[in-house]
Image 1 (cartoon, helix red, strand yellow):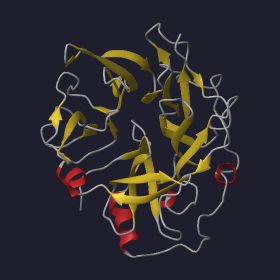
Image 2 (cartoon, rainbow, N blue to C red; image 1 turned 90 degrees about the vertical axis):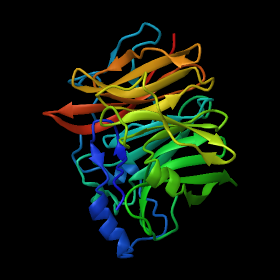
Image 3 (tube, rainbow, N blue to C red; image 1 turned 60 degrees about the vertical axis):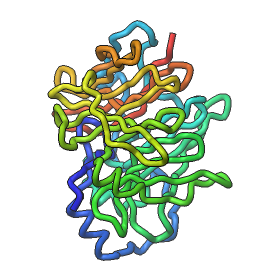
Length: 328
């Protein structure tokens, strides 16, 4: 069994894949009795009585530490619900956002596998607002899969998945054509087993793979690493030592020009967003951008900062929303 674990619900470990349990389910070949590609809405799946958290009821609102953005706010429109929106990725043009959704953050992953709504969703900007999100299906009808942590570069998607025929959580890719994501493919043993790649981000030219991992040589629980693509083969990962500490660094985002790397690290006991700027070929000292249950940064090319904010009550995560801090 693979040791690697990818969190599909973000940096504080709200919902982690139970590799052992899901591995047992998937190895049986069990197929739930449900319609192919069910059309259950997110609203229908959210538990009755769930209360939507708002900035007014938030006990630990996100705190901005740099005066380059306006104060962060929940992303406007139909994206955020009383469920958990997580692991968001915004395309560079700011026109499409992908995210992981589960209707109840307290439900174990082995139960999410059967709820027909937990997975990757997409919303498009129509010029005046965000459209109602739609499910991104990345598995054949009637087959089990739990997908999350999407990353998109041009017409290629990378994502994490626990699915039939594979043990544990692995990286897969898919391609976009005819307005549909299809051709999902296992990313290979080199990345999944040998390099133990966690959540990841590719450089704009596709030649560098940034990721977090607890692979041997890590300074903390998770470290940031980079692998170079040479002659079609991903080379041995290099530890990004200037960025890593005895704490955990992960969930990287690389700017289009490759001059800024953003990531999640703990600060004052909760996940926080940091960035480092390239200086003469070397990553500079990381600076704190956002704190207080802020995680998984993603930016459009205008510099607007999207991230995940977790709502915590009595020490438990009860909800997660996509937030945005617009660039001044």
